[in-house]
Image 1 (cartoon, rainbow over the protein chains, first blue to last red):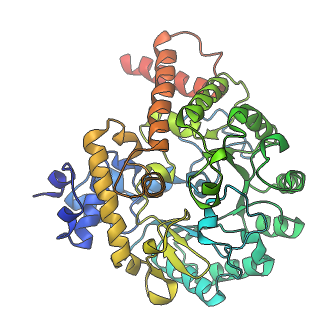
Image 2 (image 1 turned 120 degrees about the vertical axis):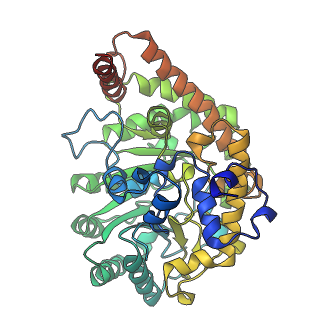
Length: 96
Length: 381
């Protein structure tokens, strides 16, 4: 069964017992339909490019340019760097 | 070899001079002492050698209790182990009480951003201490040009005052984030502070309606997350993402956990003393266990819930705290997300379909929807 088929199944913990750690990682990232929301930091992006997903999602430049931006929708104050916008992604992205 | 991004939430101490009644961290205790310098150095060395972009969130407990010399060591280690390709981001989450001028100068010089945990003006901040002192320190940090944001807890005593809180921080030009109280830590002892989902949701809807037409609006989470979901199809907060492999928490003993939230000891992955590479963590039985549980939960979400495409199965810690098991979905935040996504989405759809002037809406909405209208015009032509 391909990873694509697996990620569309309802899985139990037992289903996953025979998976290697690498296969589990593939299933985990593959579950998310909106792959552009993923920032893969463990596995080499080229692996995914070649085996599963559209390369544009895993182009590191794509993430670099988007990850640290202050906003990705409506920014009426682009010339005001001291303005009240999220400028620190780690703060704004953390749920703690 | 990994060339990616990781966020490490480091709790260099568990001690806190505030010990708020609703603190989720209280689960792990307020043990005195700091993360050992040798462990700190190894943590920085390993992360910088394996990842290009490393975001350190210095959390706690109260991290400023470690003192300025400790933070100087952090910066020294980062300089020592930095590779050309490394991009290092530092932020501190503090109660603000110890944020004196020495710290402010240090953080400014070393480009740390500061998150201050405070629930707004005194009337809204009744479960925290020293509002005036913290506000003075926040104002000093802002005057010094530090990047400052506020993080507020919404609970039963301030749930109806989000507009006041918002106006308060907005006037200071401080971006803000509102988190509902978590059902963990010492908050468990105070059920009187908990929120019924409908109470929280109704207050959020009221707040959204206010924000939508505020001509001097600033961004505020979680509203910003709902708008992102609607307009971009994705949020950027960790609770709506795939955090495993991308986030780690480190406590004052040097033990690794999934993130900075409170987890029982069974979720301890390993210690910094026991690994030679950060990637060793991802081979540990405890990591594999939460990975499997997360996959199971998400597979149910994916099959059973139409919101999966925007929340990605939610947060492991929320599942654990609300349902007692990482494998089980549902609960307070799940319900909130569904209601609020529908509410904000319907509102924006209605604005778009009305085709009327956008002038009454806030500058963010106005600019974004105008841009989209223009795009449509050019696309049609």
